[in-house]
Length: 335
Image 1 (cartoon, rainbow, N blue to C red):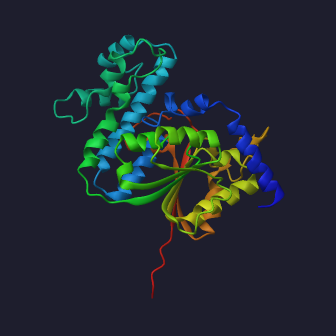
Image 2: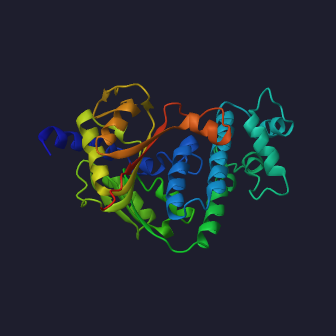
Image 3: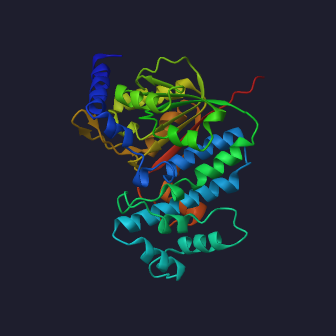
């Protein structure tokens, strides 16, 4: 790497390693970012499950997306000051002036005796740990689909795919890949530039493969992993580093690169915003799609708010700037 790239890598490392280990261990695993209800984390798990068992769990995947959208809405109402019992009364009375239709429809479905899904709305609003902050949801509700997936995947044949997670943090998403039983079907490696993140991840999962490495120079061979995925990293890179990181992920992946963004747009150009040691850009999905298409990849772009409205009727997403890209390598057929 040239001097500018090495300097950026150094600054990125400093921007994370300056935080205490305890802070990093809880970062992006609570509230609307909790991977159990965050739409992009659910989508990521769904893509891996569907790769292992194509079409087998379509209905369950849709129900988990609905679950995430519903509990996110409930959490937002609690954060605005609603009490649990007031909110439950409003839902039970089917008050359409205060509750979105998709919440009422979901609640009615969960009360049906034929519904195979536990009543997670009731669990979220009736069960509360007094030691937790008021807006928090109970693990009883949050773990609903962790339990269901663990049961379902325990009966599936031992198919395995190799997966590389870039910027894995303190095993932020891996915790829930493991809790839902998916890690039994993955040959997983997680890398992060921050040594404290990797120390936390290894402390949680001493037998998992976590490594201190930079996305700008992963040191992996070409096509080392079937799938590569990454959450919320690209917005923090300069334009040159962004292109290098994307190229590196594509080089390492055999089949797909799955990218999740917290600050993206349909606009034709990136908005590059330096912030002290790193960046907080708004990245252009058009620009990134063109970048990968020039590498002869097929690109699917998902605007989370619009996609969840189509999938489960959700009226919105907690982050209107959230997008995901699925980048598939084109398979060349031998003549």
